[in-house]
Amino acid sequence: MEVLQDLAKTSVLKVQNYSKLSFQSITNLATGPRYMQDTLDQMDDIGVGSLPIVLLSGFFIGAVMVLQTGTQFERFGQASLTGDIVSLALVRELGPSITGLLVAGRCSSGIASELGSMLVTEQVDAMRAMGTDPSRKLVTPRVLASLITLPLLTTISVFVGLIGGMVASVLSLRINATTFWERAIKILEFSDIMQGFSKTVVFAFILATVGCYQGLNVRGGTQGVGRATTQAVVVSSVLIIVSDTFLTKLALYLADKFF
Amino acid sequence: MEPYPSSLASTVTDTGRPSIEFNNVRLGFDEGEILRGVTFSAQERETVILLGETGTGKTLLLKLASGLLRPDSGSIQVLGKDISGMTESELLEIRRQIGFVFQEGALFDSLTVGENVAYRLYEDGLGDDEIQPLVKEVLRFVELAHTIDSLPSELSGGMRRRVAIARALIARPPIVLYDSPTAGLDPITSQTIISLILRLRDVYGVTALLATHRLQDGFALANFHFDPQSKKVRRNSPTEHSRVAPTRFLVLRAGKIYFEGSPDDMMKSQDPYLQRFLI
Image: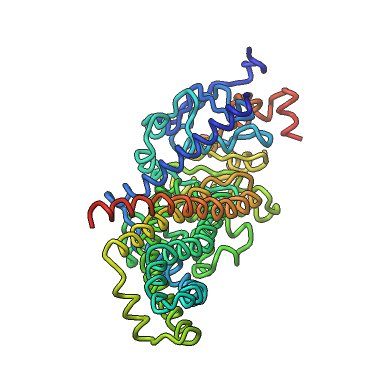
């Protein structure tokens, strides 16, 4: 019983500390000092650094979507609908979630290991000792950079995905490229774009804050850094998938109500 | 119950107003209470040597003095302000008055030596034209001017400690805290570091807390001084003893102050536990 109580207390404490850090990362923006150069460096690392994997995976996800759905539509003589379904799936769901998961895998772990290493080598304490607030210097720039770059990466991923889908539909289903592109664009409504965009903002916040929290709460030296890195990827990926479900439900409800 | 005889604590003559004051400070973690009611003060320009075995809480005292940790109970005054109840943002201001030299240097490994040393000045919003001369000056002080563009990973352990001292010194803080500055270094490099601490004390007149388990570091600080005229470290003559910045020993044992006194008191003590440090 005592073990369960301790476990519950530890879990609640972790959630509390994570919430506090996340809240602080945003409220820090209201007052100075602001670390713009650090934010730009992080945007380069998170945004530009993630571009190759986002481009590559985006293209092939679009292509494989066409191959999977196109053959089914062909059976009913509706192969031209492929553009519609691929476009909707990429904008609403696959673009944000796959990009979120890819960037979480690459950057959440990177953030956790970087901050974790700084913590175990007392660099974070040194920072505090010199009058710098680590949440301002280390957390806020990473969260802000993530919030700015993930929607951009997702937009690029969706665009490249549609190109991949178009190439696959031309080569495999013999659909005219213009028809595919026209249908893919025409089917999209404002609510679809908003649904995808709102998801990327939430996913960006999750992957950055989870990485920072895990890094700044490392226990047990270098072994702890390894554990924190793994935890950062696992927790951020699970949170992205879970939040995706709720965000989809909410977005569909709001679209039904207001659009 | 007092585990050790309180008679070992001797009265120290005040040399000025206290820069740091601990009053019945207690601190514990999951594994138990580490500090069990620590009371002491460091006067202005005084050097207090914190001696003790590993795990007696020397580093904790330094972290408490800089507000990096908060006591479970008791109060800590730094430069006349009670820091034990301060918020983190208030503490950030107090920490600007304190230089902290961490055990392994804790240099930012992605920044060059020059950027590490200049860090606090950049934080204060100073321009490059103001920062660069100051950085060069403190790097010359620690005799590492040639390493300004090197990365910390390219330096030896002793050089890293000297850069850490330069970084702590750049903002001319009235208090400097040293966490085992000679730990793990060879005797010659240790002597270089101690000479540097002597120079810092005698040139800038800083108040210092120095955690160490090496008694010889304490005696070196007590018995030598830096002569600005000849720019050399010299042994104190009997007439100079009263003029040089005072040094006091504080021995920690089982979370309490076991001994507090001058280097002479320490040398003359017949206490078996203190004798173990003297061998």
